[in-house]
Image 1: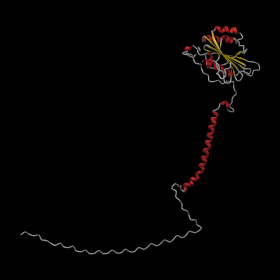
Image 2 (image 1 turned 90 degrees about the horizontal axis):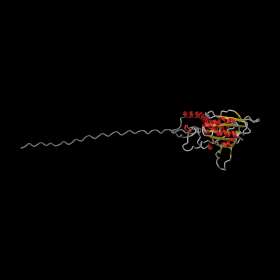
Image 3 (image 1 turned 30 degrees about the horizontal axis):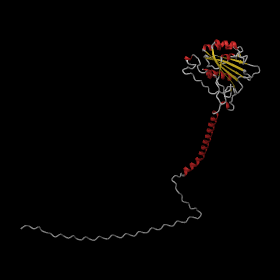
Image 4 (image 1 turned 90 degrees about the vertical axis):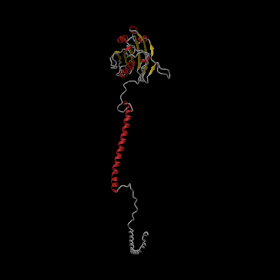
Length: 316
C-alpha cells in the first residue's frame, strides 16, 4: 500500500477587533467683528483717489526740474539771439560781397575814365597758319588784320555806324597812302612807308560816352625788321590832328618787352589837368599800331593806357 499524504483542514482567520472611533473636533470660536470706523469729522475733506503714474517724477526730481526751467529759458533766449546775429552777419557779408566794391558807401572811388569792353576774342587763323608768338611765325600776323583792331567799348558810338539791328562792322580796309594823309607832310610820310614796304592798313573810329574820340590804325609790313625801322622814324612825323603833339614817354605795360611804345601828348591852355590829345605808336611783330585819343575836356591817363594795352594784347 502506498502512503497517502495527510490532509489538514485550514484554520479560519480570526476576526480582528473593531477600530476605536475618532474623537469629534472641538468647535472653533467665531472671530469677533471689527469695530466700525468712526465717521470723519465734517470739517476734514475726504482725500480723492490718486491715480498712480509710472512715469511721474518723484517730488525731489520735480522740484529740481522746476528750478532748471528758468535757466533753460535763458539759454534758449541766448541761443536764439546768437542765431539772429549769425544770420544777420551772414546776410550782411553776402550783401557786401555781392556788389562791386566801388558801389559801397564810403568805398566808392571816382571814375578814372576807363571803359567797359566786351570780352575780347582772337580771330581764327587760316588753316595751317601759326600764331604770331610761335617760333615758325617769325612774329608775323596771318589773321585778318581788320579783326585785330580793338572794338569800341560799351556805350560808344562807332563810325561808320553799323546797320540797324546788326553787329558792329569790322574795321575798314585802308591803303598806306590813306594813312600818309594824316601827316602834315604826307609826301614825306608816304616815302617812308614805301621804303619799308607797307602792305596795307585798317582803321576804326569811335566816340565814347564821355566825349572822347578814339582812332586806331594798324599798318602791316613785310617783316618785323621793316616794321621796326618804320616805328623808329615815326616820331619824325607830325599829325594834323591832334596838332603840336609833344613827346612824353609813358610806360603802358611792363610786359611789353620787345615791343616799343612811344607816346605823344598835346596840352592846351585851360585844359583841366589832363592833355586834350594823346597818341601812342606800338609795334608788335610786323604790325605797327597808332592809337589816338582826343577830348577837349582832357583824356584821362588810365583810359589812354587801357586802350593802348588792350590793342597790344590783341596783336600778341
